[in-house]
Image (tube, rainbow, N blue to C red):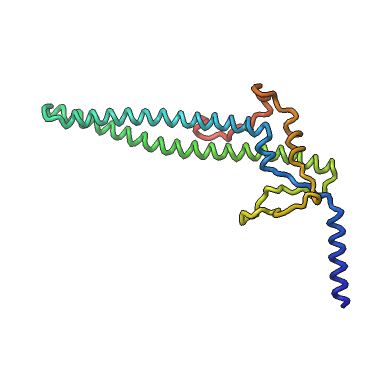
Length: 211
């Protein structure tokens, strides 16, 4: 009997403490997507991606040209009307062309792997910088409005299950729209060039970028 009364007292105390907490929730996914710097960073990333794709296309075109030249040399070398000396000459040229093609194949694979890793690192660095900037505003707003706890309602656990399964509207304040307005208050007008400080952090230098 005494034990039951003690447990009831603890539960009541916890309930009262929870009722006194000021709780906020944020849709961080929406905030990130609607932050004006996210679009600026996405445009920069797209430009870098397209540049890498163009560089690969140039290599592919070179490869096609070399392959066409090798086919011509092979055809000439197999022509029955040419002399043995000519056959030997064209055969040697074909061998050198094949070596050039193999070297380019290796260079193309290394280039693709290197650029893919660079773009991946750049994307991670950009996202990290944007989230850190958003978190500065989140913490400032939380302190200013005296929130005890602020949750990201789009967060998921290691098992990919949402951490917050249900929030009664009256139990928490949704700060999402307020934060979006605050983060975008200094956004440049549509069509205007973004400020230099708005640009995403530069991609980490790699051996390719140093060349």
